[in-house]
Image (cartoon, rainbow, N blue to C red):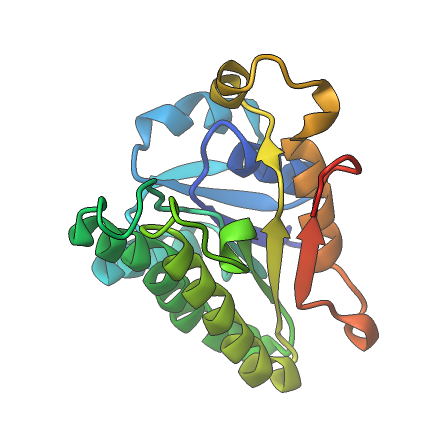
Length: 233
C-alpha cells in the first residue's frame, strides 16, 4: 500500500521540524516547504521519504508549482499543515503598514492558497485534514502586536469558514492555538531565567497536531488550544 502524504509549510527548527519527524514516524512521506530550501537539507537527509521544496506560501504561483511537483513525486497530500508564519512587533503607530500586509499574505492568504489547491483531491477521496497552527494573537490583540495579531485572527476565522465548508464533505479542518513560548534556542536566550515548565515543547505540539489530524470523524475538533500547565490565562 502506498504511504500517505503530509505537506507542511514553514518548516523551521521548531514546530515545523517536529511535525516532519512525527509524521515520518507515523509512516507518512513528508513534503517540507520553506522559503529557504538550504536550511531543510539536513532534515531531508535525516527523514526517510521526506523531500524539501522552496516555496513562499504568499505566492500562489509558487504554491501551484510546488503542489504539482509534490503530486507528481508523492501523490495527493492527505494532510496539509500550514505552519508558515509572518510576524512583527510594534504598536499600530510604530509598524510599517507594509509589514502588516506581508504578514497577512503569509498567514491568511497562504492558508487560502493551500486550502484551495489541495481541497479538491481531499473532497474527491472523501477524507483529509487541513490544519493551521496559530497562537495567542489569534484570540486577542495586545498593543505591541498590531502588525501580527490582526493577521492571525483573520487566519483563524478563515480556517473556520473553510472548516464549515469542507467538514460535510469529509475533510477535517482545524486551528491549533499555541498559547505559549515555544522551546527554541532563541527563546531560551530571550527568557534565560524561565524554568523548563515555562516553555512548550515542539514535539508535544507535533503530537497533538498528529492526534487532531487522525481524530475519528464522529468527534472532530476545530478550536484546539495548547499551553503549559503553568501558563496563566
